[in-house]
Length: 200
Image 1 (cartoon, rainbow, N blue to C red):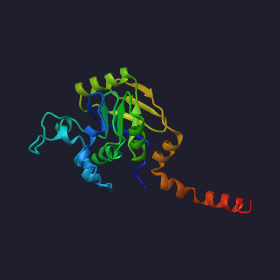
Image 2: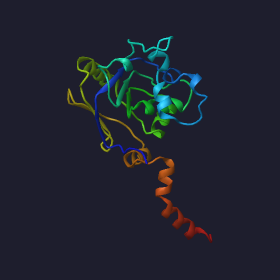
Image 3: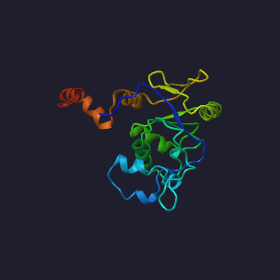
Image 4: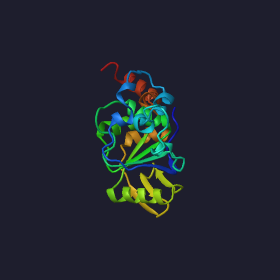
């Protein structure tokens, strides 16, 4: 059982780069790991941007800037392009992000995020620009994501947008269920169907 999604109110980390691909999210050399260790992948999120060649923190990268923090990553257009590695979603979840906001996601990465309890929120280009402007003007600005209502609100301006969310994934997120948990929750219904159809 995962942490349930309902209303997430948080400050945001801005990453205004377009076409961020999965190799930038988690470099290929970390794909040798076949089990999901959230701390390992979270520690290596954006590894080549986050660390200098000598292994020290890059002071110019946003994750190393103490001014910005929160459970929401606000990213530029076309986030998660490139290879379909699920490890990228593992790294985002492992770092502690629960929501990623962008004006466009690569489809496979978007689904990988949902499967790993990270909510990808697609907004208009104009709303995304407003979010970046707000965050840079006030790093303590709050963004509210209401999963039930499927809305995202910039609390500083009061502006909101609706976002799309598959009904099944919405149910799973709001109830803290992965695919296996969902099937187990339907065990009685499955057994009833099997019993009713055993002789057919």
